[in-house]
Length: 229
Image (cartoon, rainbow, N blue to C red):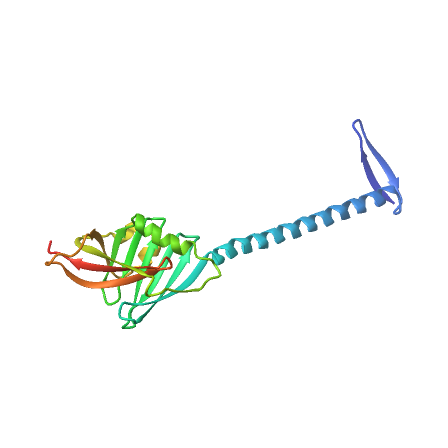
């Protein structure tokens, strides 16, 4: 014999029924329903969790594009460089290899509106604010189809420009003021601000240049010089 409690508004009615009675038939299907529902909800939660994690990781992976750019220089020597476009973090990173097989790094931090140059065989990084022309150059990379991995520029069609940046030796940048990408790039180096100039006068001595080429058929030779303070 079993005991089943039937709740009503006015009283509790005690009814004794057999093992095959009405209460047993109603209780066990009711319990099985809730167990089945709980298991289904747990499965849905696990599925959504896994799908969400994959959804978070996949777009970031797909948002990074690496593009190789080749162009002959004025002497006919082929220049090689690669540009990594990180759409998620608004970063464009150039690895520029010189004819002497030395690689310098240039980072366009669009979010912070900064360009950071890390030349090879130098103990410093050099920083400057992005200008309208810089945004236009970088935009040509952002518009490049994601399936494209190589751009070969024609020597005859490429426009060549030269920029002169004066290194402000006395204005050293506090590393803690930089965001992580630039801070990591220039680790163990000093960082100095630079200022654009219209062209070197006779007293200006250019120490080095970095050539950067964009898919818009524009190559910019960025040259650095110092002036006595």
